[in-house]
Length: 409
Image 1 (spheres, rainbow, N blue to C red):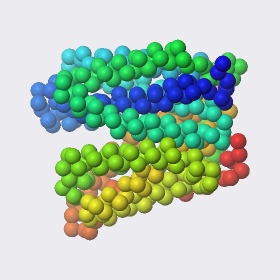
Image 2: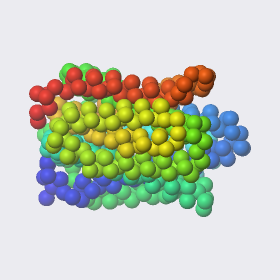
Image 3: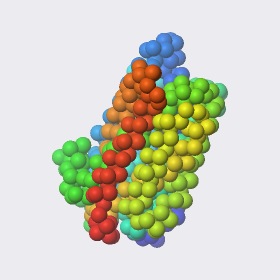
Image 4: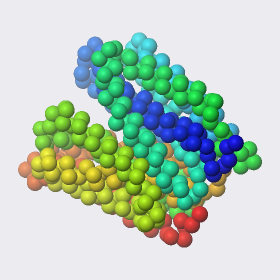
């Protein structure tokens, strides 16, 4: 029998599988979506690049608006139905994209994907419901590690499947999501008892309502602001890393791919094995500080590394940045009532989505500025210098907000 705060291994295993499949399905599309758009556009590279930028922004915007809605729905109707419907909806959406006859239908699929993927914070709320406060950081770290694992193997598998057929990765992603939804239907118990559920109000189930929750206490506001600066700074790699290492070190696609995989492996190991001992030794506050300091060291190395081997020295520190988020999520979860976990995780996901919207525009433009200042030493490293500064801001805000007395469960 499932008991709250003592979830069955099958239930938590389902959450881990969901994290893996969520990013695996997304990663499957990384190497094929640009090629599919290019094919549908008749080989027009310029038009395809513009559309891909629009696709990415639209996907992040849908997550930005949908995350607080789904979080509030899970507080009202329970985590189980929201999780299962999100997974099933994502699977059906991948089928839509697999058969999309033109770019318009593919774009519609990406919009729906942004909404259904926004159900992932409900999985984090599920963990908050079923895990004691002092163990939440460890669980969040394990989910983060599962997320990293899916993203490591997803692009490689997508590339292999694309060799068979360009739309094959969409069909595989659909099958994985639908199978996981069916599996969850049989083994996943509800984590939020009816007496703990809150009413659903549209004025709260939106971006402004989510921000109102984060503004309700000093610690939530501080953690939210720290999370925003962290998310923006952390996204510098996604925005410019391929262009950066190609231009500065003349790395090949294989070298870049191996570097990205190594970074993913370091992040996975840090989240899986460092979070729990770090929290036991340093506490939640010290753990996110250690993670952020590691990120500052990594981005500083990246900014000033004149040779490729110097850049590689920063990868373990970049991976250790991954321990900051689970600690911050745990601090925030411990600061709200149980019936608000869904709303909280939706709000934090909204913060993350907002950072994903800002970062690509910000860092690509700073990258261009650095190139324009070619005569200035290390000007090409400006994006990483800015990212390091943002992590310092996150550290200062988070340190001031997370006072020791606020962290007691």
